[in-house]
Structure formats: C-alpha cells, structure tokens
Image (cartoon, rainbow, N blue to C red; front, side, top):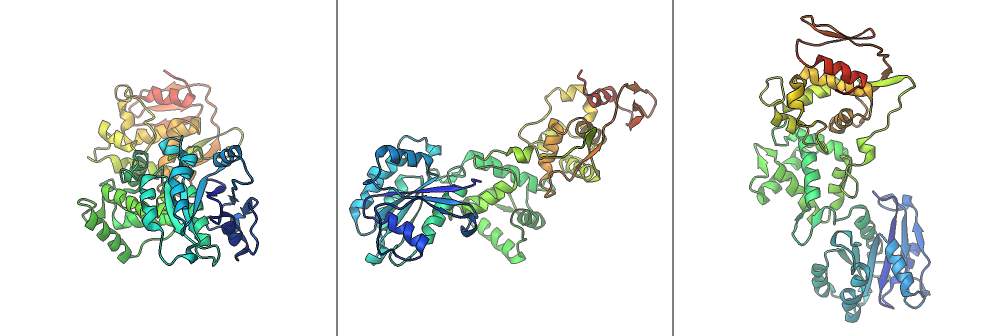
Length: 441
C-alpha cells in the first residue's frame, strides 16, 4: 500500500476547486477565495486510512500547460470538478480534462478519476443524468460525488473517495468493461482459497470460513451472518455453495460483489493479508521474511514446523498411501510461485516424496541456508496457520561436517561428524548426505 496520497484538483474556472480545499481545511466556507490554494498536507492521524494526503490545486490563470503536465505526472488520483448548474463544465469533463489526464496512457496504467459536482446547494435536482454516460465511457472514473463547498455537504467524502481510489484501486482487480475479475486477481484469490481450504475438499466449511475471517479481519462471523453470506451466493450462482460450504466459484463471486458495490477495501485487505502488493505480486517481505541468525549458527525446523509439514503432506496425500503422486505433488505446490524441483525428481530419488524423507529434506534445506528455495516456499505456505512466518524456523549451532561416512546396514545411518540421521531402508541416502554438505551431483 502506498505511503502517501497526492490528489490533484482540475476543472474549469469558477467551478469551486479552491473553495472545496479551503472548506475542507477550515471547516467553513471562505469569505475570500484566492485564485489558487497552496498545496495542503493532511497528517496521517486525521485521515481515515492513516496515510498522509497531499491536496494540490490547479489554476489555468496562474500556471502553464507544462506545470499542469508536471502535476498530472506526480498525482496519484485526479478530482475533476464541475458545476452542477453549468452544462458546459460537464461537457468539458469528456472533451478536455479526462483526455488531458489519461489520453496517452495504457489501459491498465491510467490515473483513477473522481468526478466532483460542486454547488449542489444551487440546484434541487441531481446532475447524474448527464454524468452517467461519461462514467460509462471512461472506465477509469471511480465514482461521482455531488457536494457543496458553501454548506460543507459531502466535502470530506470527496477526499475520502479520492484517497480510497489510490489505496484500494479498482484497476488491478476488476475489468469494468467485461464486468469480471482480472486474470491476475482471479489467480491470487484462487491461491488464497486453496490455502484456506485446510482439508483440501474444494469447499470452505463454516470453520474454515471463520478461520479465514479471523485471519483477515480479526473477528469471526456470527452463525447467522455465515448463513446470510451463503444465501446471497446461492441466489446468484449455480454452484457457489455445495454441501453447505463455499466453493471457489462462490468465493470469487463474493469478491466480485464486494468490488461492484464499491467495497474494494475488503478484497484488498484479503490480498494484502496473504502477501500481495498493489500489482498483485507477492512482496519480498512476504517471500523472504527476516531472521536473525547468530554467528556460527544455522537454522532448523522446530516441532511446529514438523507438525505443519506433516499436516500439509497428509492434506495432499488424497489416497492415504503415505506418498505424493505426481498429481498430488502438483497440488502440494499449487500455491507456490513455482515448483522448486524439476521433472527429474521422479527419476532420481523417488522416495523423497514420502513423508519421512520430505521432512528430512526440509531439515536439510533449513540447515544449509535459510534462503534455499525449499525453506522459502515452505515458509510461504505457513502463512495460513500462523501470524508469524518464522514460527517454524529457529537458529541452531552450526554443524561442522568434515567427512561423510555411509553405512549399509538394515537401518542405514549417515554420520556427519557425530550427527546421525536415521532413515528407513531406502534409496537416496547418499544424496541426502551430499545435499547437507552443500555439494551437487
């Protein structure tokens, strides 16, 4: 999420841009209005989203076109102000101001726009009949707010919606022309659904929904609220609810509904809780959580890590045979950016798919290097069961490994300078030893 918001006000002369800014700051209509207000900075602690907000006025009388282009380039969102009593100022929205702001921008990189109808105190009706065709023409328009600087009507709402358009943008989530979620958003929400589906039955039960709700928003849903949610999904989708649980299609529908109703912040809260940035990419802080490792120490999994891996393995071992088939292994890694192993896994050390060897391999990975692919992706999945990415990785004294001695007894063991790893009789023992030492085959 952005650390600050820069709002630029544009529009024809005399529509009340400067009056809106002064009414917001002074909480009263100004007796004298200058040609242009100085840039205003609203501190984080007095804004709804707790983010510093800069409000910039523009005057065609005092500023040049080059200065205008510079201000547009620096802005995060643009409020195009018009006079609800003046049709000419409404026509200029589509013929002048929006093309000036986003005329050469790519579809997915256009600045969000808030339409602001000022001087509503001078008109008994609404200007929305004239505004709706413009909103349908330009998908970058987030909303329209009618207000009055004179009687302070909806002044704070204007800047709230402008701030919201930056911090919870629509463009990465939803295609208003197609009226559906964008592919990247759908992919991210599908991953989140898969992580939240703890028993891997493609349905979110009431318990799983409440765990998800608690994780994202801090409070569980009341039983009646859960039933109301499922009822809404049932009425609008054919397969959104199954066996009294929410399916993936139902989960995607709910988020689409949030966005269509202007509740973008709900979907963004979910996405950011699971590590996504404004471009719907997993953040480095999420992928590579910091861990302080003392000198001459390495890392290892604690018992929470082993329990989690065991539980996750059993979740994806659908046939209960104690091994992950290729399709089950693909399911296991479906929530990761990519699978850390290639197809050669099947032909080299097939027993590594089994539970005990899977745990041994993760221990080797964490013992050798925290940034090893395997431990990174293991930590990535762990977000679903803990608020701390690091609850399963702990520092431990570094092991000196000057030699490797292999035994071929019935219960083979690998001696690494006094450290013994006990394994069942199986192939792949040498690879485990060499992997621990950091060598390659």
